[in-house]
Image (tube, rainbow, N blue to C red; front, top):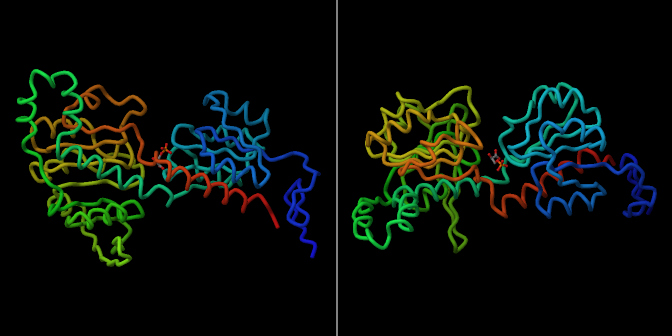
Length: 342
Ligand SMILES: O=C(O)[C@H](O)COP(=O)(O)O
């Protein structure tokens, strides 16, 4: 049976791309794309460009090269000006979750498709939360800085300085935002034997499935509670909310936390007031903080970068091979389903 699919300017006949292949659609992956994503796009007949075009040259580049799809992560900004001045652009794709670097509503209003991959990186972000929790609770961020410098001469002093580590098991973790990533955090926390509490402005209750190696699992229901209550009851707080207009954790909230508690932010910079956080760490109110995102990126303040009680990562929550592979193939599939019309 002849199976004719019209792919815009190309044709598939009997499931083979015809040689009539004029005007191949171009995808510019400006913040990079995994090989699996590139391969999947190429298999569908797209040309993939992975040049890093500087922000100020993007409009010209997109027009000169007649780019149909622009893929970004968090570095490239997709502005109203770009949307207005790049008529060839049909899809703006965010490889990741947060779309705060894209004028989403405006782009959609102007008829552009805006896509992202909301589920692809949840596990990786959740695991990074625990990397920060384990780091902070056993002083890894400071011992990694101090030992190469002072190790030989002051080993015993350092050992003494780090003797008040704490276990995570049995402690209460407060998850602010129990969406996909928050639920992954809950799953790991339950496996570690932690008590999980959550707060969310939209979700009333989450059901989290914890899998065991022998194919057994349990479902755990997590009820949400007001943020103020969560703040007072948590030993560790982790934030999983989108970008906000102002901090949701400022001085007032930090003051209400348990003395010796800790906080992790792998969500968005600005969600915690950094100045208030430093005060809380310096006064001993908080034991430590783990930060993957910052008020100022890519150059966080010196105070944040050098603080002995802050475990740092440079916005790498989604930066695992597995997450980026899922992101690449999911984007390729979404692009194909939008542009390749049967
Ligand atoms: O929103 C996201 O998906 C994360 O912040 C990851 O951002 P990145 O793609 O720039 O690493």
